[in-house]
Image (cartoon, rainbow over all chains, first blue to last red; front, side):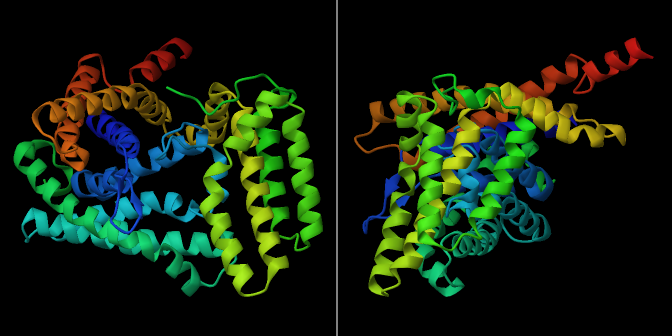
Length: 181
Length: 210
């Protein structure tokens, strides 16, 4: 019980810190932050329930007005902004990532984690993001999709990194690995 | 930790969290039903007035908090400029500004303590059904306590990386950072267990009341 609460809280803090690390700009000018990498790691390491709760806690604290989102943003305004869908989708994305990780136990960790991050934090998260953008900017779904398409490359790279990071963490701290116990 | 709370005290601070939040929800929904550019502009004027009431500093801070919307406004502008649907573009842009500005106003003029109290009230039906809200409160406290610690450690890791390499650290510090967070979590969990676990306060409260 204590262990779950503390891990959920510290991974929520980790998502916040990863958003504060200076962003990398891809060659064609699209900025990417490590924040969604944190959401991926929540799922691949903590599993579906704890990972989803960690992301939910993070989103909840952003709503309360803590400046935890990348670029020091926070507050209720974000939940009506065009990127609201991504924010609201974080908990679901972490949950799905964890679920894939838990169900797919036969494969080696790096591959399973990479694919889990791809399904949860790219496929599922972008569905939320696109719907959010379509609503706030009053555009059709295909138009909203083209607007966010620029960022997919960055998230694909992050999913691969998440796969390798998860494998390294699995080796280093096998006893703290909730998604495959 | 830096706060998104207003640097100055305003009239809006005196309104209680509950009514303020309900008003915000009603206003946000209403904004989606206003399709006239002129009406949206009037609303923007009204919202600006709400900020002006708080004084010059408050107004400037409020405007700065809207700055992050510029890429979206640019996209809307380009899109509706190219498709010759100016009126619609103006409505969408103004609605976005109004909705975000109003929500920011609530965040800026409500103390974090009051918001957390509000959340506690919202969660109180759960307590009535026998669910404990103590883990949620504990988790919130832990995040607020540990975010600055993990952030400082990310700085230290990046610095020691720079001492060894000409390249920037970037994502390479994520591994040691996550490792350290995992180790912290194990230590804190152990310390909590040693002190009686996550339910300690509640147990003593029940004893004293019963």
